[in-house]
Image (cartoon, rainbow, N blue to C red; front, side, top):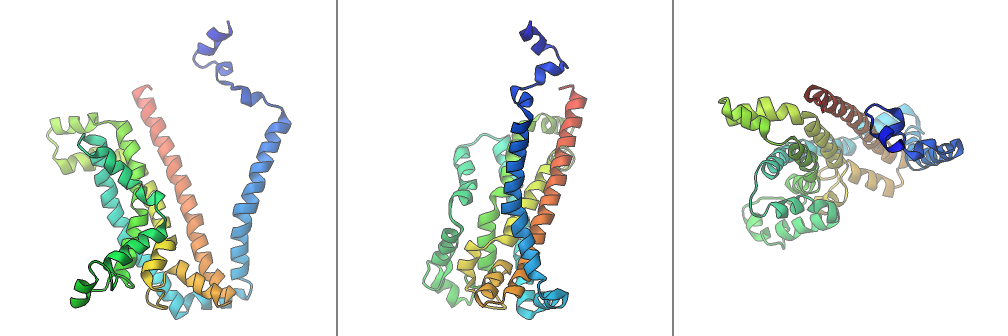
Length: 297
């Protein structure tokens, strides 16, 4: 009898897992543990950053942010992200399209290579670029002869940022495109749509929230990257220091107020990213629910 009840659609009893009938003290204890960890490891550090940044008042806070070296670090961070994120956007869409829509030799190898930055230390990736483009690197003499600077300059920072962030867009789109299949694109081609029209009017609307989700995560990582950028930047103050590197220098100089002021911008970026991430997830769930309702799934 109980088995038949569990199979009745819409029956509330069928979907009540045993965990939902645990004693109230178990639920309360788990919630308390989760909230305690959240307060200690997330909320308290964020509160500390902002309290330290404003310890000497708003005047000192503003002065630390408009100081020449800090402003240079902010501009460089934004510029590196502005170059790296669009490049990863193009790569992520192309890679996910190829993996989800086609079968070809080396497909699994490509998927593995996309995940490579997740397993390789950012410091190692920075050292790779120094080995390739440094003064004593593989291409160093040729670059020096043609007066081209990559390491200890903006190009090296961009390359390191691209390397550590390129999985984010692709990894969001690959499972999404694989789940959607290719029936809609095939129908568009049969109706006479060009490749661009098929992508713009058929593929893009169905992946737009996943694409935006990947871009948000990619941008947050690009602006907060430390290890790889630290190796290739050379720590030239006012020239090749990004915001995380500038925070480290100020902290090592015991200029805590200025260090926490710049760090508060990175903390604000994390909060904004979390808010946008939540919004995109909500929109994605709504879109999935609407599509399931229309298809009757």
